[in-house]
Image (cartoon, rainbow, N blue to C red; front, side, top):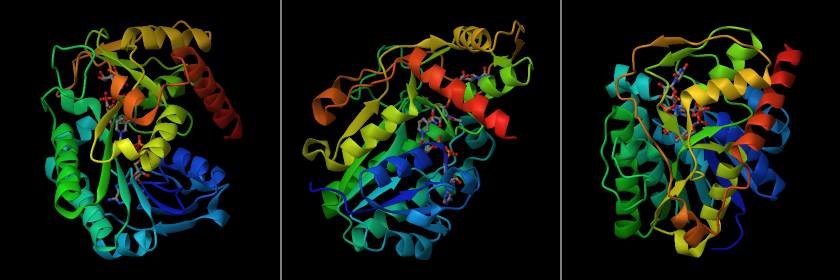
Amino acid sequence: MKKIKKALVTGGAGFIGSNLVDALLEAGVQVVVLDNLITGHRSNLAEVLPKITFIEGDIRQRADVEDAADGCDVIFHEAAVVSVPQTVEDPIGSAAVNELGTLTVLDVARMQKTTRVVLASSCALYGDDPVQPKHEGLPARVQSPYALQKLSGEMYARLYCKLYGLETICLRYFNVYGPRQDPSSPYSGVISIFMDHSARQLAPKIYGDGQQSRDFVFVKDVVRANILAATAMAANGQVINIGTGHTVTINQLWETISRLFEITIPPCYESRRPGDIRLSMADVGKAGRTLGFEPAYSFEEGIKETFEWYGRRRNRK
Ligand code: NAD
Ligand code: UD1
């Protein structure tokens, strides 16, 4: 695969997408963003808007995707309903985006002769498989509509690769955190919520006993993995975990974040969320072998950079 010339980032106004846009611009790539701003924000792109083509549109609308993908050699597909509980509440609405929207992106890529599509998939599809760390050879054990929708996207991606020769790579992100993760909804990622609650001296909610654990990976590492996936020859047709191989429990997470903010507020424990996974740790061997990827940020470094960003964000308000 040659150098990327022009790339489409679906969901490019979101948390991961906007960080990816920054890195692509730094690498000299021409960037198009397609986003309907349902959870993303124009402000995430404020500094780069003059340098990119921003299309406010929807991946469920084929014409919007066709416009956005025109002349792009790579598509990074980030747009999705990202919250597990939200897909539990609205399985059909979320499937329209996560399944049919993804199929639309793949089909437009096929018709427009895009070289490669890199899909944002998720470790959620391993479910509560007792095997740890989770490796890509494990069967899917879906326990939420979200996981099933991501699995369907992966299967379509592999089918399009075999049937039509479209290069596809599915990256199974573990729990991503970092600057620009939006804390404003109860559906938001736990680190963003805990940062926001700490800054406002509010007690967080912990669902279940807080002993569930996650493999938290810093957004800049996820961005680097995406760019490697867009260019690595050996990656075509593969599904690859993107995590760190380490875990933190939700209780430990609150302790770490409240220590940074120098507060001592006990959390409120509530019942476990339906569809919630207990243990999640990535086997990152395949990412090393196929992409030459290793996470550069330790949890401590990533949390510190995230903490500083939430501090600056609060000062701006
Ligand atoms: P995000 O909500 O910040 O970004 C998603 C973006 O997609 C938003 O900007 C939103 O406005 C846009 N979008 C949603 N529906 C759309 C539609 N129909 N048409 C066009 N745009 C639409 O979330 P994120 O955390 O940046 O997630 C990016 C991707 O990574 C998603 O596919 C998500 O499932 C996946 N993922 C995220 C994590 C994580 O921990 N954050 C982990 C695994 C996988
Ligand atoms: C997250 C992502 C999902 C991704 C998956 C991969 C978001 C919103 N969701 O889902 O897109 O595919 O990782 O693993 O980014 N929790 C609390 N209190 C809170 C919020 C959460 O205790 O206020 C707990 C949850 O019950 C869960 C854990 O923290 O056990 C993580 O929750 P969350 O950040 O929503 O992530 P996932 O559900 O793992």
